[in-house]
Image: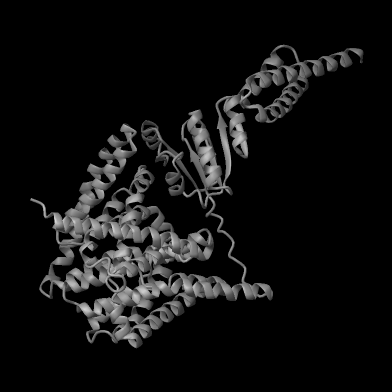
Length: 595
């Protein structure tokens, strides 16, 4: 029989956490400080240190840790081999330098907490990691992801995300003792390699079958099955559950279903990540901060200043302007959410004491709290410099950063994609027909499976950074839905659209598409010209007829947009234009005969 009192307490704590998470998210977003900080402060307020609504936050930590597993899955999805290879210089040069140099300096700081050099190295490397969730949100809010300094920041975060995996392995290997070090690293690597090789033969057929069902719910279930199943396998192998989520992402990083999987898992990741941060906030020991205020704030100051110094120097080494190097340094200066995993992991193997873990988690949390404050102070100073004419210019967007998104990769979309490819213009193509995706793959082309008329899918495809959306869809309703969604959600995104017929074109123009082309219009005009030639007209007369017809027809198309719902009015306008054209050419014939 279930223990109803335990269940009641769990449900009560979960309800309080959700309410606190929502309140923290809304209030701190409104204040401009970001959601992560809101979650931490909300958890702190309802935790045992302040209001005491949550008596034992650690009882909920295991459940909310699934959010970290899902976060690592999303990160694994981003780590496509091609993308890693293209960013190898930033990853290995900039990212690895930041992590190792910061780790060495923070190791010296960690000796204030522990007498063991080995443990100090682990602490230093842990604190050298920044908060991916925190930093990416700040970069997005500043519209900086597409800038050169934003791309450098992302490369550092990407390397740090990768570094978490060897850190998890290293902690478990060291924690097992010196005897285990002779075989555990090799055994772990072999096990992961076998898992990666064998699992591919399962995931591809699975998601292909799910795609044919055309059910978003089936994709969500399959995605959760993959992530949680892999996490469970890794846990049974006495490795990290978070590592299992990462490997699950790597498995499908090159799959055409990658974006669909990311969208399917995103709501769960966001919710559980929020609960994770609220739970961590509730676990912050305020009493410890009051008892050791001097040491706590000294460690916070050292953590922030050392990382800011290293990041600023690396930014200038990358030839960033002074202002952009400062922004990169401030945004990446805090300790990261992975400290909330790596530090308890070190406690699990008795590498650290509970009071040391509490102290370091408090330091990381306070460093997150200070990051938006430091950015606010920087912005105030930047505005003063701007008024005095001494502001730094923002970096220009890199040439390869703007991209084209092609919705629908049938015969129409493929022509556009092939022309972009020969000019090496980067684009993302997506189609919701699994048969079409499979067919295109056989010709050696890359296309993702997904429905771009869903907002979360459009975001996942990079619409916030893209230059242009090409709607090459055959389905009229889906095309119109996508055009409305893109226009409302991404007003700076240009939209070029394929129209099936005249009414479809008018509705797309009414929505606000920049360019609309009827799919058979150009070929029809070309065949009309050939027909006129065969009927006895000269080359110039046939070309002039088609040119004048096109001018009048395009004008009629745009004029009729205001009457797209009034069929009688459109018919009247069409007849009027037809009469005008007939009279125009009749007068041309008369003038020619008179000459």
